[in-house]
Length: 409
Image (cartoon, rainbow, N blue to C red; front, side):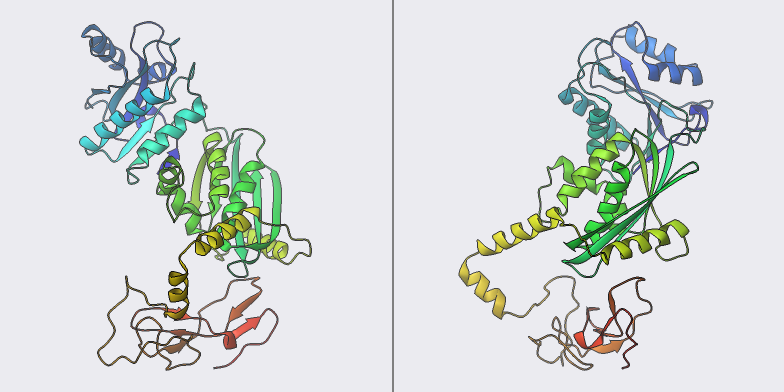
């Protein structure tokens, strides 16, 4: 959704460029100066709008593209004059106007020069409101053009992260590798009870919080949960909704991540795990070692999440709790209809090939996993698979602890 670029404005591959302007003539904004240096027709267009009395806060003015300038210019009046206060309400209105104009014209990408910071909103609040507004259209590519040129590698940091847990609610750990020029640093930690997703996210949070000043960051992770939540805008939609909804998990960690995301210029990049990337493999090793440590910390966020879940279950009527205990787990959505000759759904967990699937009653087959995660405390030699509804079941009999030999079928 968001990426950073130091490409020259005349060579920037984008449909439109947003330029912060004032409503009154006078000293131009830094964005206007940068844009005017690249495009000679900017100042005449601004003067035309000013003389016509068309410049009003919150209303976007469009300078159409030309043969010499294929990029459209969105003149965005954020405040009346440099000394006036930039209010959150006014900036939300302006952001919505920019988004509406972008979608109305069928644009797919939009570049931003930094807005001028003065009274009212600071740079972090401005970026937060832009992300919250444009997260409603996650397919739109946002390109942020920082004030500092990035041709000099000074200030750019590469972070690799990984995390894992033995099971949901079991021991877990994370590993981080940071690289800054010739400098290298490793971080890790383990917890008594946690989840895989929390450890993947914890690794990213710890890595970013280790930075001592705002930096350009490339954050690498093999977690689709982390990468997709950020790059599809889901993080910003949930944050703008104040984390309401049943699917908002690990809110404590996401709030810490978002704070760092707004502070630094971060690009989140997905990489394939266990594919020979040295720093990613090292993170996996650090996470495994931390998980096996004898001094494991307490994941307070996970405990709070478990306590809320138990409280929610205890508040349900006893009739619903009793019904949930006696009824089999039957999926009612995204499951293929059972065949006409299907056997009755089994209440107990399947244990061998031929047992009926608990969801659709179809006979199960034994399958052998293609690979196992490195440094895992245990894995399964085989599992049961339903060819009808695509569900799979792990069986305790097939469980192998680390260091044991393989169990045969």
